[in-house]
Length: 187
Image (cartoon, rainbow, N blue to C red):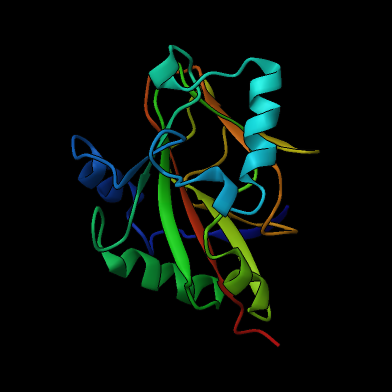
């Protein structure tokens, strides 16, 4: 993962988070964010790994749970537009994830029913932006890096859209992260 910069005062993440508080998410993963796992490339592998490890969804009494908020439905599209300008990329898909205190997003990569389409897009880039103020208990991990106490607004470019990752919240506040996927405008 490559540090790109910080959104600075261009996006008021505190205001965005306040908009999300108390409203229902567009999806709750992994319970209703995915359709038939056989129709989504890679999802069956993830489920098999979770099952072998005994990972349980919240609905099964476990802690594997996250919320997904979408632009125009849960937060203002201008947030995505501003972020697009900062990273110089056009958006194909953006969302904000939230991991509640005591929950995790267990090891996975972000599968999609649009896998063939995403694979066909040239110059595809993937970013995440840590939008909470630094707080204890919020951890994000990839295969070789761990992030804790990141500055609010820090942006990281992923080496691959299919990067395996996970997150955990053993703090007392919601853990929000902004995610962005689309073709780079840079040549």
